[in-house]
Amino acid sequence: MELTDTTPAMATLRAALADGVEDWRPRVHAMAREIHAHKEVSFEEVRSAEAAAALLAEGGFEVERGTGGLPTAFTASAGSGELTVALCVEYDALPNIGHACGHNLIAGASVAAALALRPYVDELGITLKAIGTPAEEHGGGKALLLERGAFDGVGLALMVHPVQDGLTYNPAGTSAQAVGRYKATFTGKAAHAAAAPHLGVNAADAAVLSQVAIGLLRQQIPADHRIACFVAEAGHVTNIIPERAVVQFECRAFTMTEYEALLERVRRCFEGAAVATGTTLAIEASEPLYEPLLQDNALAAHWTGAMAEFGKDISPSAGLSGGSTDMGNVSQVIPSLHPWLSIPGADVPIHSHAFAALADSPEAYGVMFEAATALAWTVAAAASTPTERSRFTQAAYRRRTFTQEGTS
Image (tube, rainbow, N blue to C red; front, top):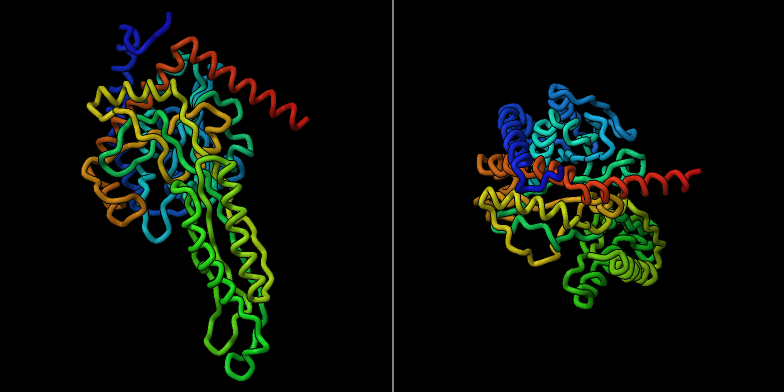
């Protein structure tokens, strides 16, 4: 029997899943608060990863730590059904600012949903995985895990992301930008800045010229493109002509074609600065490339229906939005859901100290548990709808076959 969102059987299951989230509320709340308190940055999330993994183990999951060779990654598995579902668990903080992106709430929502679903994996015919994915802010943990096989066989992947108040809970049509991060190194020649400045080649000048060129370029790029940079190194004392300068930069766009074109224009800004100053230039990627985010429409519809029951704004979104996530890499090969979770009263932008404080508020934890319930309901509906289940299972099979052929 097909268990649609409105059948009595599904209503019974949804009530049981909601009760499951409530049963685990105290423990998950404590875990999320612990993650918020410790503010562990990319690849250093030792306590945060262990807090999530230990709670999932307590809930009956078989936990593998160090997934993909990443010490702060894990995979918690339950069930043996042919359809494999992944709930992504993030827990890294931002340097010097803490959980200003609310990853403690992401972890809490995914872990609570997983714990609620655990008793029903056989009934739903699924293999359920909660995958601990470190280094979303910097380092591309999901991109690395994807390359190393952690998502092999997964038919659908889900998570949520907190944002400021006032945004719709409807993920349909929303995306996130591709982003690539790089290090541009100029090499010149040192000399005494007073006795023989004419014998030096000033790498710091090249850093300045590249910033000026990028600033002028911004007028000529589409409004939804982004370029950001900062000088990481440009000399150490005033009486030496700097022989080395380093500029960290990133480019963002909503399609890979646009991103690659933007990157080439920015690269020319650095090349021009090197020519003008007589320095040499080396540009290298500093992190894995984050790809654009794709939302699965069927998953989005289940999620939106669930959040409507909590009285949330599910009006059609304005479309594309800013920011980037390594969930984009997952979504390019696995049907995925990555909706926004609007925190009531949060009238400040993410990546700010004020938002970090609000991510630890009662209002934030309230919507976190609503999101956990909605995630569980979405998984149950997708697994119980034959046409969707078949599509997700076949997508995983095709990807697995392709991978095997490509590595044979």
